[in-house]
Image (tube, rainbow, N blue to C red; front, side, top):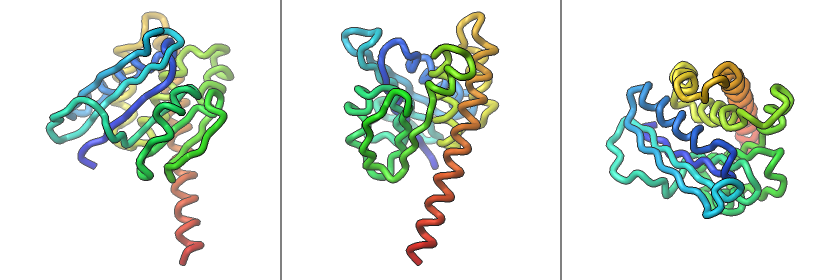
Length: 194
């Protein structure tokens, strides 16, 4: 795939802007062209936030994501705003801890316990953004773990590097497992149709 477009959505304070910056920087480490932008709702913390990342080996002529390939939603509000209007081919990843009312239109739908996993491992929701980054990056299959890890080490706030590395590893494994389960499900469905 020559280019992938990511939309990371949630509420202000969840750290999705930082996760998007890490994703974009991982693309740079991979030698790709990258564009990254973000916007907050008027409330900033607690209001809607969205961050966009485009990574590819082609020139990027427009830095905004109009038709995302991947959408991550970490809040019910963000899901309603961005997750309901996707192309059928888009990959939708929701945090099932925060997003409980879902009517997926996409056949590529992942509902994963992102916040729950972070709480279980670290006792708080800090690093949920990096765990989510690991999920998104591993499901996309476009960047290597090494590129994302390099970015997390560079961008993690002082004193949080070890926890964020662990969160990335947990998210990466969660994403790989989810992708494998999805591929097996698609294979079974194709087998049932023949």
